[in-house]
Image (cartoon, rainbow, N blue to C red; front, side):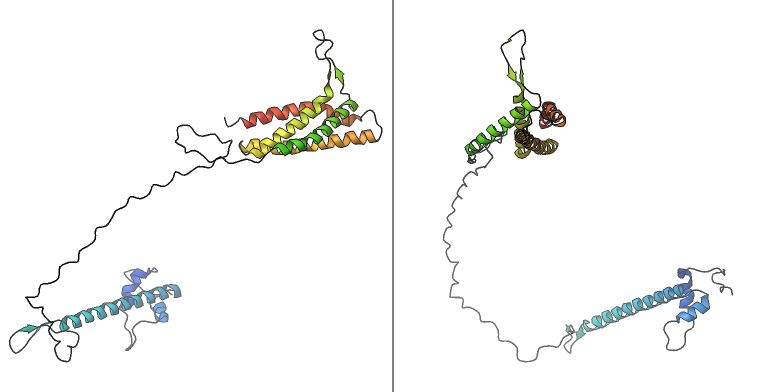
Length: 299
């Protein structure tokens, strides 16, 4: 089976080419559009292409109907508005709505010429008052926040900070217990009296056990302050957070180790405790230097 010859070719034709042939088909009386089966049979096309051609024909028919309806309405409206001539020869427009039925309305009353019209009522002068100037807005700042230079800043309302002296009272007994525990643990792990200035001051001696509470606990308190201050870069804040928690944990373990050794009557700590305690000053030095560099990284 071959396709019918349209426009001199037997190859499948596009919808735009088949539309003129579809419009020219002879239809039975009373039928406006060819059926899909007839389109498929006449042009040897599939159902999809036949549906598209049929949709195009219906769309064109609807467009023509709307145009015909609009043209008819315009013709009718023009006939209604065409002027007609009465018996006196005067042209009167023909209206598309009925004329009012009933007597003519009464004429509007006219005012006598001798009665003067009232003038405009006097208007009282409006008193213009200048708006009151608002009071300067006070800026509330943290006491430690520096004031930016080159800006006109109004005096800030000073916010009273919480008192800190109860912390000192709470820290005194903790300081005594921590100091004695670290010094005692240092004595059990080999820390003791040394002469740091031989040949210069032979009589000057120093107990190296005090380096443990000064280094570990001081670094823990400083790292905790940096972490909670909120005025350092994020990387420094994270480092201070974890190193402060680690320092406090190491301090607690040192106190536990000392009291367990003393309670057991041990006068010399095991080697692994001695090794860990001996590395603490070096670890504190490294963490302190790293935290100082991270704190000043944004300067």
